[in-house]
Length: 516
Image 1: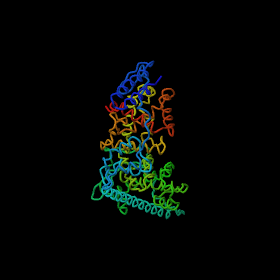
Image 2: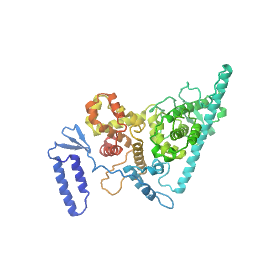
Image 3: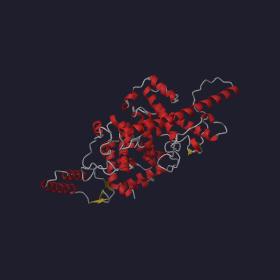
Image 4: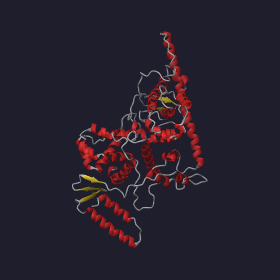
């Protein structure tokens, strides 16, 4: 006997046959026959809010859309054809590109070209000349931030040398290590002062130095509060009587220490995706590592050493661009894909900045952003799978804190490098579709099987991943510890396109209910 899912697949497939009158009659007859065959011998089913429940409603069944969608990414050929040849504008404002990425992701060879458009670094309506202007300005801004980082590092080295010289005079001990660009590691105080800017302006800095993923400072907006003027520090003015500037530099030092440690620990998953970086020479890697102030990294192969150095340089710049967030452990995981696929540091930096306009909420000290997302995952499970939700409530886990790590680093630890790229670029395409109201439908079907875009596609994907483990959770999980172990065990065992299909179906089915 056909299953209900097969029956629905057959009904929709047949109804998509030729629109001629004879075909319609044939389709209607076959569709009814298939449906009757499918439900024969099955207990009464009731459709509720797009979900179908058997018997007493304890066993939810979300109808899968016809067949398993074929993974059909945006190709290099289609990307080139999407532009007007003379002026370089996207022919339809990017609608076809956005829809294609939402449906199937991006071919690896063109990711570095497409990502800046999806993230908003380049406007979808821009032409060649306009993008060149933006690129030039963004490069200068990044270089100014890097210059400021170098000035701070020089001041820290100078202070370290002065402190060591004073110590040697009091207690002469041979000590030739002058490489350390920071001192005073025992001072872990959070910075709540302000850093003066040119012209008397100031920007608030609120941060600590020993945070882990999920920790950061509260903010009131979705993007960093940063003056349009480039931050400037007169390193020669740092003295005992100027505590504000000294504390600002001290805070940068603490971020820098954690960044360097995290950068050296990054794995090598990205290497197959970055041929030019994978082939750097020992000399090139050593030079960049020296510029980044890396230590204890000589054991790394040149490609990983080079990658770690780039992470340091870009993350240092980000702490000055967004001092309210600074740096938290976990941010290097979010930056690594950009560094791997984008050769120019300034372009990788600005893509990361755009990404962090949303992701920075994951690093607030009060965890308001994280709590909102966990609550939404809980609401999705409650609406789509009441039985599973009731079990989670029974074991006091309905707050969904067991998916905390998935939310904080956007499933980076649960997915392979390639799967992470697929998820993130599909997610960015949804963001671009909502922001531009483009790429919402392919215009060829009365019922767009892709469904509406969602700002929270990640959370629907996480909910879909949890539902994949519903049998184990219902039968064997009796507490939070078991749930956390099960979620951590998902790493390397997930099919991202299967999850995305499940996430799309959840968006289609329960979005209106959970958005109330």
